[in-house]
Amino acid sequence: HEVTVVAEDVFTIAGDRPQVFHWEKYGFKMSVPQGSLEASEACDVAFKAIAHGQFEFPENTQLVSGVYAIYMPRKLLQPATIEVEHCVRLKSTEQCNRLSFVKAYCTQKDLPYTFKALKGGHFSPDSSGGKISLSRFSQVAITQEGMSPGSDHIYLAQLLQYHISLHPPEWFIMFLITKGLRLTAEVILLN
Image 1 (tube, rainbow, N blue to C red):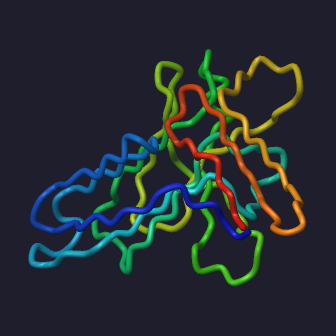
Image 2 (image 1 turned 90 degrees about the horizontal axis):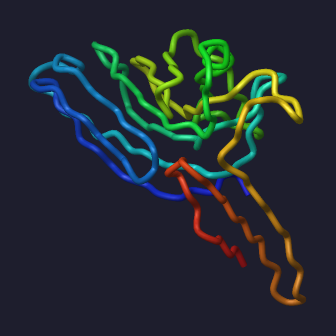
């Protein structure tokens, strides 16, 4: 399966005023400033919250958020601020420095989707999310570097997958169990 989409939505932005798309249930927020488009322009932005997919992240990193596919037909004149909730309990600035935003192109033809680290982004121990300013969009997520068993990094999410064969039919069942992370998939049965 390419991706498991939990939710989809469309948001229309206009250049004549600031706007906020707050997808609270799925741990995502986008703040678009006035002047991001020409004053007379408007543009639809399509969002998908993705719980699982054929993804490849930078070496020695692990996904610690949902993946958000953002489809916008043009570059913004002023960058928007993206806020994404992650599932790591941060205790220090050093741990914050191990988090980074990553991006993959939705238009990539071959799988897996290859994510690359983005420069910028802000994380703090008193927050359960990160912020980054972007003018162009695609698939965005947060990863953490240097994961090892027994480390003091506490993950508050776990993905369990099962492939069950009952001849016929054949089912793929996925559970995303989370604590403190709003992107939660129901049990998904794919026949």
